[in-house]
Image (cartoon, rainbow, N blue to C red; front, top):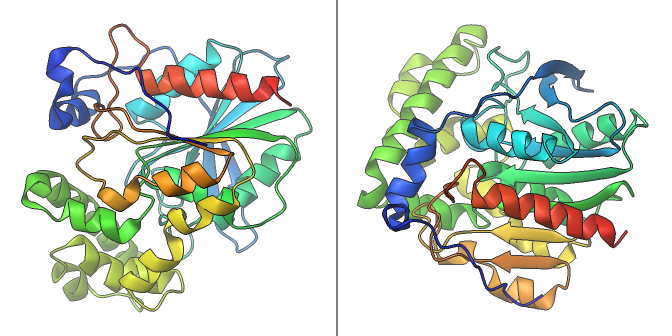
Length: 323
C-alpha cells in the first residue's frame, strides 16, 4: 500500500519530539482500568504474565498488546490503549514479556526485540479459550518489532487474527541503536542502560554461573549489554547477529495480515531505515503512516484519547469489517 497521509497535528508544544516523548511517561495518568492477571506456562518451563481488562462478558473481540523496552502492562501507553479499546467493546490482554512482570523469571533468557515465539505461544493460548473470533495485535516500540516479525515469518497464523498495529517500531534494530547513540538521546540511553543493568544484577544473583557482576559493571552502552547478555542468552553470536536476524523490516514483504505501522517523523529513536516506505508500497497488506509529529510513543491529542489509540481502534474496526 502507498504511504498514508497522516492527519495528526498536535498542539504547538507537542510538536517538539522530546517533549512529546517525555510528557506521557512523566505526567499522563490513566485511571479506571481494572486488570486481572493470568499466568501462562510456557513449554520451556518458564512463564509469561498477561494482565487482562474486560469490556463485557459477551464481546468476541480481543486485542493483544505488547510493551516496549523495559516496559510492562502498567505503562501509561499500555493502559491508555486498553482503556480506549475497553470503552469500545474490546477485551485486552496486556503482555508482560519475560522478566517484566515484577518477578524474576525461571530461566536465564528473558526477552528481546525478536521474541516472536513467545508471542506465538500467547496468541495460541488466547485462541484456545474458544471465546474470541476477532483477535488483533498492537505492539509498541520493541513490541512493535516483535509483532511485525511474528506476522512476517511465514508461520500459519490463526484465522482469528484480523489486524495489527505497530507504534514507533524500530524496524531496523541496528539503525535504531545508532540513532539512540547520538548525543541528542544521551539521557534516554543512560536511562535504558541503568534499567537494563539493574535487571542483569537481579539475574546474576539467580544465575551466578552465567554472568558476573564485573561483566555487568563493565557495560557502558546498549550494544555492550546486547553483546554480553541479550544476544548470547537467546542463541545469537553477538549483538550484530541479533540485530540482523531480529529486525522486522526484512519480514514485511511476507505479511498477509492487514497491518498499520505508525512511526512519527520526529521520533528521535528511529533512523531512516525504520521508515519502510518501499516495503509498504510493495505489499498491499502493510500500511505505513508517518506523522510529522509524535515523538517516540507520544502522539498526544487534546482530551483523554491519544492519536495512536484512536488510530488503532479505527484500523482494528475497519479491518474486522472486511472479514
